[in-house]
Image 1: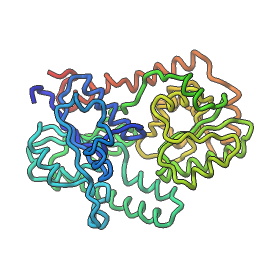
Image 2: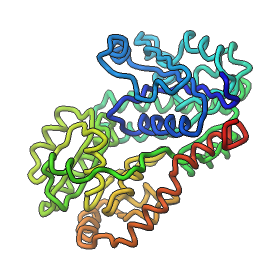
Image 3: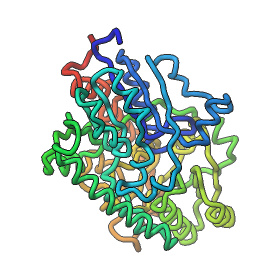
Image 4: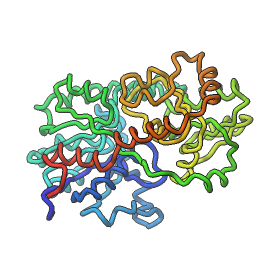
Length: 400
């Protein structure tokens, strides 16, 4: 603990490639904070399977593990009580005395990556520590959105129950007497930041950490043998809202058979994979690595994100905006966001096919792309945003 700017991070999962969504954001944040010179003490909850793989050497630790001061991981308990708890399951299964004891021995400032790991705020042993929460989603809203998208009745019940539990948890967070003082909330969504502020929390908008390096385009495209121009969707496909989006993509592909299509992602159910493989003119790319995914995103003529729901930030949208094509989204999903003017919007479900055909017929011009990329890079600049996190927690942007 030689640096005055020493920070403990509690992660909801250990970022191990391939990275999607929130785990990717966490990984890029750690790299940016290390580049800034912060001393990091990492605590990560992992599945029992990943715990065994890490201990046996079957899976490698992230390549930054030798640059952090300490790295500890904790297997999530799988006991029935974590499902029957009054807390959301995501919180109850990321709670334990081993973590609390380790945190008590570390630096006083703790950044909780996601509300899933906030149970430790109630630990008496951490009364002299300062807690910051990185809010990835308004969780009650996120789970309600998943319940709406789920087609399986048991999953629909599960997500509705979890949404109710999360709402109770959010009320608990706003009651400062029930836990250690919360120094602040860093939300990656400007709209949700205002919600937290209206509830009396010390909330700040801290832009997401995303990969902005130029992708290596050609070789990956050749390996995948993707016909250009093509329309693309990508995401983690064990999530009901993303599964619903893929069903919308399949309907759109049947309405627009004149285009080539690519769907890339991870954790897709076998039934969904069969649907994708059966669609003429569509190529399914299972769990592409970062280089392959970057190349696919970079070269898509249009990137479609046919989801209406709003919860947190769709990082795939920012990823797509660093490509060379249109990003076609529902107007409700982007209204009020700083980068809304750089996407192409659809007002109604019936307008998707027409909107896609118009976008495919009007490729973006070079100057438009240059300005879009310049503004996106400036807004999500990792060095700038790491400095902001440092300033919020320690009062200055440069470690001393």
